[in-house]
Length: 310
Figure (tube, rainbow, N blue to C red):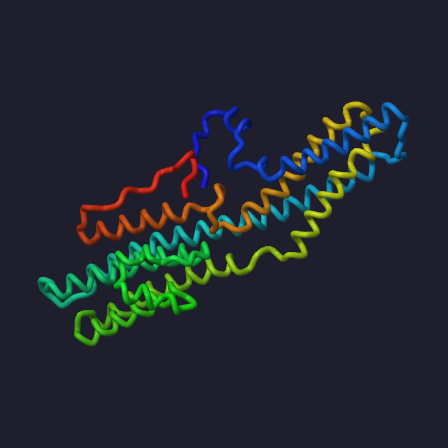
């Protein structure tokens, strides 16, 4: 996610990284070349395509509306992903509070109970990191080793759904603690409900990742935008003459840019500059939960690198 100061208007106007320009510049250049050739033929050789701007005006209005609908759908996916990870932050904190206050017999906790509480909290941290890695289609889960045993990390390689496997292992430890009398029967359903909330959050994220905007809709929009922008010079050259390249490039920039915005926001869990900062959120959750255990040697919060927070 791009993190930058918002007090400089020109900084936004002149920005390049993380904007639509890296993905649209060659398309715009192609339109500019076509428009320049059409203008040259019209000015030097009297080439008249005999098209009026009216069809392009009507199509342009409809195309702008369709692009707006598609961008709204893409932004809804991006925003829902952010809300799910915001819920993950709160649910993880709740789970750590329950582990550290509801697990253990009455009276002062024994060393064994303290160790179990740490294990449970660390499993909550491992779940968060595993969910991030899963959503980003990672294959290396070695960064879970500080929070899980090496044997369990190795066993995760055979699991098709690694975050779910971690949650299942946590539930087994809770059942064992309940059978030993370390969790009150009245408290166990509350903890289990929090684990269920984690599963619901995971399912929501996986739904976004596995269900992109329909391919038919995306390809149709790309084709209409391309056809409109590349044929626009033929419809306006008689009206604007030598200014055709300038007018066409401006219109093409708008439509190509809107088209790219939809593509950029459609998949919120990747590592592009405009994707959600899952690594930073995961680190924040890790620090928050380890502080609940009283730990003081904590990793630093992630900071933006070149104004990009990963």
